[in-house]
Image 1 (cartoon, rainbow, N blue to C red):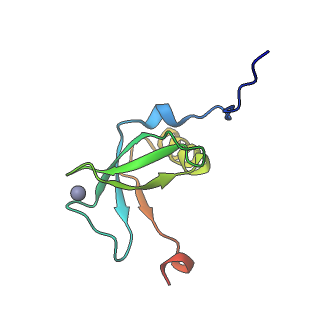
Image 2 (image 1 turned 120 degrees about the vertical axis):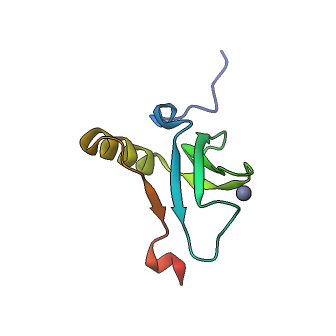
Image 3 (image 1 turned 135 degrees about the horizontal axis):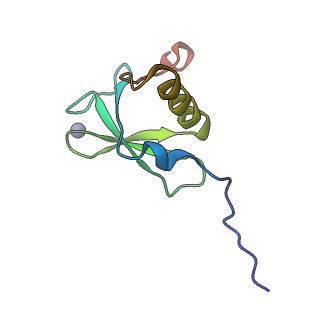
Length: 91
Ligand SMILES: [Zn+2]
């Protein structure tokens, strides 16, 4: 019997793959403030963020953030989503 050591919780991230969102983080700039949501291969993130201009990795999104974006889009249509760093983290 072979055990699967990489069991992960089901993710809703595929619903947002390819979506462009705005990223506002002080001191963290690339060629554009827009990032594209892509899949994540890491165990700690449900999705990754890549610069819409050059494709550079800009960060990761946890499953809770993915669920929040999906719920927001379902309630309000498809507004432009902006991801900001919490004030406590910006210090
Ligand atoms: Zn860039």
